[in-house]
Length: 167
Length: 100
Image: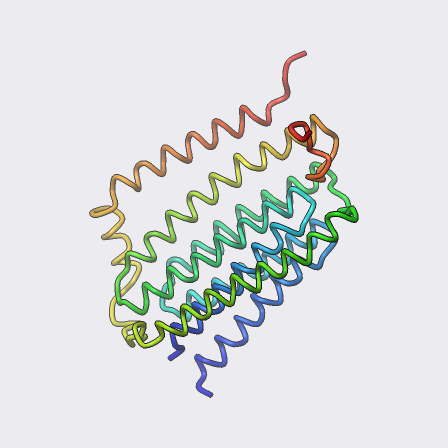
């Protein structure tokens, strides 16, 4: 087994363990910490794929900003252990069945088209950060500007939603 | 060199786990986190295809997805705070105003 393959399996195992732990944990703060493990493992996989800028953004935005927001809201609302009713416990079995069917369908599709996707070894050939910045500010400049409006609208919406109504 | 199929299978597994968490969890914050997990799984597939095809479009799309996820987290957590304030619970089964 080559070194990249070993690193891939370690990181993939970490990601899957974190995702399973997100489901099994009862307290939302433990689920949030499990999700951070998944995100850091995915950042490592992006580095393995030669996408260093995406890896940095993943750590900063997902691992930093978004998860801090989640943990902050969990602590603000004093969220406790979740309770399951008998109906929601029953919903687990069909849900598991659906997920297995979905994963099987995707895996079968990938296996059928496996000869179409051949990994070309060209990592490190081109600086991906330079290429990404060229694409964002040339080809994708209008979508990029639109996302800044989206962020502005989201900030306004969040502050309007969360403000205390005047009595 | 790791084959692209491995990344795609891992992406499918993570997406499936996200769907299961979305169905099974009862806490509205945890349901929101499972949406983030599904978005992350799709991002992994984007980057894997970007590397397999030797084009950077996939990585640019991932940046847009991350921006949308950040906006979604800000608005969604505001809505969650409203739910908690109005109904004094975070359990989605107690948020049943539209239920018969």
